[in-house]
Length: 466
Figure 1 (spheres, rainbow, N blue to C red):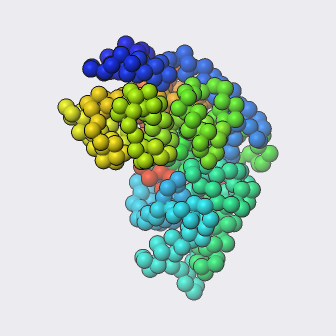
Figure 2: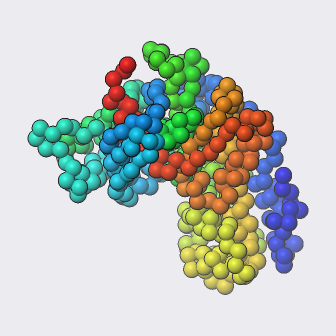
Figure 3: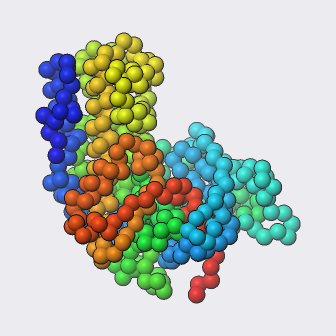
């Protein structure tokens, strides 16, 4: 464990007050194995609660996906992938050898779509994709069957229906909570006269798991570490004691943990700082998605901004100077932290550009830039270590699978792009498994997992039951 004396966080030339502030941050942000172990234990307890009854902190939502792809399936399938900031429409061609060729078009969610017209916007994007490629079915042509990756909490009631529990990740479209999101989308598609049927409703982490499983059959978990975070895993139906439906032939089902909500409302377990509490208080969903707010790309830049403002208010950063941009919520993007962490130039030129041009605060010193880099590193590395909590708890929930090779498919910008995120996360997991167990665990980037996964689940949904 790092400590305030860790040379990585000692800034040569800093004043005593500046170094004291950094040491305070190190104590808050560098977490011990003991701290993490307590949280893992509580996470396990909350998982068991969610398996036994509805309405618990960790929702453990049945996905109705009860099969695993073999990697041998072939054919072309379509998908819609709705994330936190973008929407993609995809055509996925499975090659029968665990590989897939995708053709997709990306659309940025407009503010109007995020707050009012979401489902009509999605239908228009589907229309654009099909028309641009002359794929729109007419007359007697078969209806296009699509999977729909919907990366928000839903109470799934069948493979192609589910009611919205709540909006997360900055979306807040009125009149949708408690309604079937597939019906809302299907109605919007019908309004445009599109011969498209949504045959599978897919949580993004479930899609990531199925995408990983197509290319790597021993995949047991799918995780999103991106704008938001969630995970899905194969669970024995016998352990899902709240399940009242028929027992599937496979004896297992993919569950969506909805782990971004861990410790929400109670705030009794995770190692919050004043900077996390400030972010939560000013967010559009206070006391919700507590775990997500500490580890996800949407929020880390804002956590760092709160830390830097705390230092600015003490005249320990930029000599107390600020700007309209720096003072605005969400003005520091998490990608800025990634850039800062890897800036190894002698004068930290990349960070200078961020402070002086992007944040519009002129005349930064080399000490200011070093402070920015330390803050970016602390916030990012804490995210990676906290990310291991849910992952470790889920693996320990199924110790039987750790006796054999098990793959974990991961998608998302934090895992793919934030410096050292994957290695710190894996190293943290290794501290809570036996050496033999950890040797069986592999991590793979499930690139484009949520898009390809939705198409694979649409394919599985079309298969006969036997």
